[in-house]
Image (cartoon, rainbow, N blue to C red; front, side, top):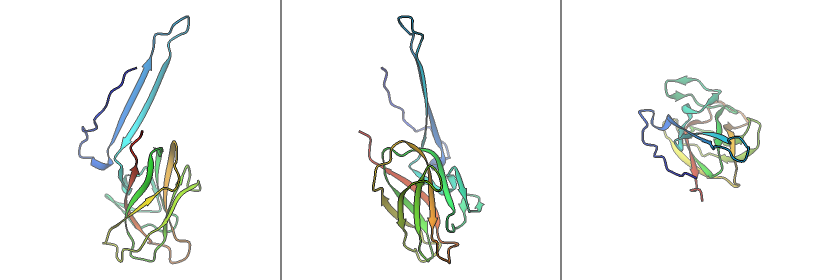
Length: 174
């Protein structure tokens, strides 16, 4: 078996929005009348801090350059195929003039299981950005589409939050 390490240092100006693609392939020569075995895996690595404008999908927003408008109730941001195995929580960067609501994190679909729900305090105005660190209460295994959904069922529920970025918090594997 071969082992090695890869240093992710060849990124350009993309910074936090860039990605690394790592492909590993295996093929042996076969033996005892059995043909060769082959295998292939492709992994995509992103920065742990993901600006909301870099999500794979966002619904309920208008985009102006690198800026997304404020979210209303049940707008959402989505990232595809994220390995949540070692994720322990999230750090949200946001502004919210008020009134307050909550952030739901769901997996697999917009109506999928809620893995986290947290109220967020108002920041007082749209120009003041705060952070909110929230741990997961249970371990999530494997790869999932992940949805970040601002919620506030009672009116007024438009322009409830402007999420700037989310950082995935993790324990080192092993």
